[in-house]
Every structure is written in C-alpha cells, then in structure tokens.
Amino acid sequence: MKTRQEYIDSLRRLNLEVHMFGELVTNVVDHPLVAPSMNAVAATYEMAQGDIMTAVSHLTGNRINRFTHTHQSADDLVRKSKMERLMGAHTGTCFQRCAGMDALNTLSVVTYNIDRAHGTGYHERFLKFLEYVQKEDLVCDAAMTDAKGDRRLRPAQQADPDMYTHVIREDSDGIVVRGAKLHQTGALNSHEIIVVPTRAMRQEDKDYAISFAVPSDTAGVIYIYGRQPSDTRKLEDKTYDVGNVFYGGHECLVVFDDVFVPWERVFMCREYEFATEIVEKFASYHRQSYACKAGMGDVLIGATQTIAEYNGIADVPHVKDKIVEMNHLNETIYCCSLACAHEGAPEPSGTFYVNSLMANITKLHVTRVPYELARMAHDIAGGAVATVPSEKELRDPRIGKYVEKYMKGVASVPAEARMRVLRLIESLTMGMGAVCYLPESMHGAGSPQAQRIMIAREINMGVKQRAAKRLCGID
Image 1 (cartoon, helix red, strand yellow):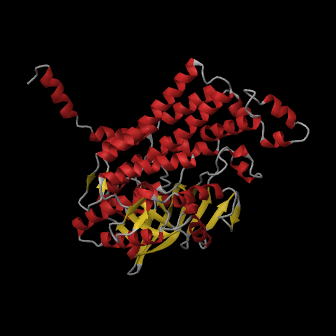
Image 2 (cartoon, rainbow, N blue to C red):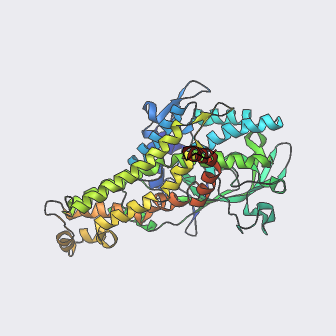
Image 3 (cartoon, rainbow, N blue to C red):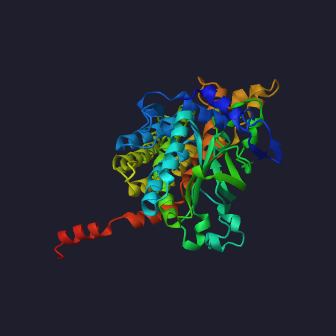
C-alpha cells in the first residue's frame, strides 16, 4: 500500500489537462485550490492500518487499502460503513474514494452477469484491472453523471448526441468515446477514471451503454474545475477563514474528447439491457456510502457544542435539547447504513451486495438530516456565523484589538478560538465545506426522487397487506 508521500508523488507524474478560472493549470498538486482536497485523499493513505481501513484481497491474498477492495462478506460491508464514518469525522469533508470503490464493486457483479448472458469476457478483464488497482493502491474516480441535455429525451433522442457519453467508432484495438461527466468529485486527485452509464437504456440507446476505465491523464480527457462558495479564500495566506484548515473538496466537469479505450479496459459495450443493473447496483452501494455524512455530522455537532460553550449557553435547556436532537438525527444515518450492510448478500459473482431497500432509505434520510443539523447549528451559533470578521482584521495592528475585544464570548476563551469555530460552522453549512455536506447530501448518489422510486419498487406491499388483513379477520 502507498504512503501519503508516495501517493502525492504519483500525482506529480500525471500529465492532466486542467482548466481553472480561464487558465491552464500546469501544477495541480501544489495549487492552493486543489491541495486541500488532495490532503483529504492522502488521509486515506495515512489512515490505512487495521481491519477497518484495510482488507485482504481475495485475488492475491495481500493486505490492501479497503478503498480498492470488493466486498467478500456482509462484515466487509459493515466495515465499509465504519470506515466511511471514521474518514468523514477525520477530514470533515469528502475524501473522494468512495465512488470509485462502489464502481469497482458494481462492475465485479455486473460484468459477471453480462458474461453469463452473452458469453463475453468482461469479467476476466475487470478482475485484471481490479488486481492492478489493488497492487498499485490507486484512486479511482467513478464517472456516472452525464450532461443529459433535455431531461425529457432519451440519449438517442438528444439534439446533440454528445449529451450522453457514447461510442463514436470501434476497431480491432478498441473504442473511441465522446461526451462528458459532470460533478466529478476529486477527479484531479485520481489515477483512473471509471465510466459507467447514468440511466437505463433501450436498444436505440445502445451506443451509450458503455463502461470502461482509462488512466486519468489519457489524451483527450479534459478537466474543467468547478467553482465553490468562498473558494478564493484558499488563495489567501493560510488563514483560518477557510474554516477547515486541513482538508477540502473539489468537483470537475470531465470531458472525453474522442478518447481511445483499448478493449482490455472495456467492461460493457452496447449490452444496453444491463445499464439498469449497473445504475441500480452502483446507486445502492453509493447510497450506503453516505455513512460519511454521519462522520461530517459528528464534526458539525462538535463545533456546535463548542460554540455553545464559547457563547456561554451550553447549559440552557433548549440548547441542550437541540444538541441531543442533532445527535439523534445524525446517528440514524449511521444506523441505516449499518442496517443495509448487515443485510447484504452474495451475488452470483461472489461479491456481496447491500440490501438495496435499506440503502435507498439511508440516502433519502441523508437528503434531510444534514439540512436540519445545519439549521440547528445556525440557531445555536448565532448571527456571527455569517458576519465574523476576517482573520486579517484580527491581525491588523490598528483594529485587531477591537476584533479581539468584541468578538469574545465567555471571558476565558480567546476571540480567535471563537472565530475559528464560527468559521468551521460557516464552512460546513454555507461555504466551501457545504458543497461536500449539503448539496452532496441532496444530489450525490441521486436526488431524493431517485430514492423514492427505488423504495416504491422494492417495498413488498403484499406482505404488509396480508399481515393487516389477517389480524382484522379478512380472508
């Protein structure tokens, strides 16, 4: 397994085409807007020890980073949930390896099923790729969300055929693909890009039913950096105005401009009837992964308790009750994630799959809870969470004394400490960190309606009705 430094060194060897704020970025690793997110991924290497963060490969028997593992038991799924909460609390942000892990597990299931139906050789190709990822301890970006164009139209009906990533030609060596994937978390910190379909496909959409992996610096792969609230604070001289002074996240629009993919890295090509299975399997795995939001919730709750103490209101009954409620809500996220893991079962390939109904309930719960936690954090923190002066004012030789004097809460706590906690709450709920906590809670792994559709599909209503009818005497 790689060390933190070996991971960073491996990124320096990549030759990515990255566009940010109208400029071509030549040094991504040291760029102040990217470095905090890279540090969050690096933490997954630093923490890689013990049975939570590592596993034993079923392919080689070697100890590997759990983020490169395919689940061989329900216990593996449980340890995944524990790992994600641990990393969410440790970094207070998105650590960017979950989606790649979920894509690996999805493909380990679905490539096997495609082969059984069509006699193809996708599963063997995938296992070779998986062994390479494990051996090199690589970060994989899971690229699912297409541009989609007119949402009312299917892929083949779009005015612009590139609104969904698709095959434009093929030969004996491989395929050439064109399109884009949006909202790619941690793309600049990844070694491999794993592309999967974003929706169910029909026969007329078959050119869009593709899955493959390419090195992240493959010719024709273009990264366009996404803006975040208050992101230029990262360009300042390491002030605590960023909120989280160690870690952060980033998103990219990733363009595939006629990218060549050799056949050995193609895991599905036009088997359109399996697009639905890939989407549903990946979605369920990734919805389980939102145990990370319980970890980030731990950070927000800790910050809220701290600011209550610094404001001198920690013993006020309604504040204590709100802190209890925050903990109650946050723990239910973790409970749901653990439940869908405990109820996991093996697929024909041998890879264990979560209980899909419970995974969708996990994610639907996540679309609500973090917003409620943010509301209560704002309630307890007070208006200063949105108006606290910059650290530069605190350091200013003329007005710093006024900031120190009037930004105090309880007399025993320095103004700087109170300002730091306020900035962290701001970041998690309104600023840069909020991207990884709130919008990601809503739309990551699918919007709430996507979970409702799956829940409606998977609930066994007949069992519930029979139980009710039997107890009231209906035959």
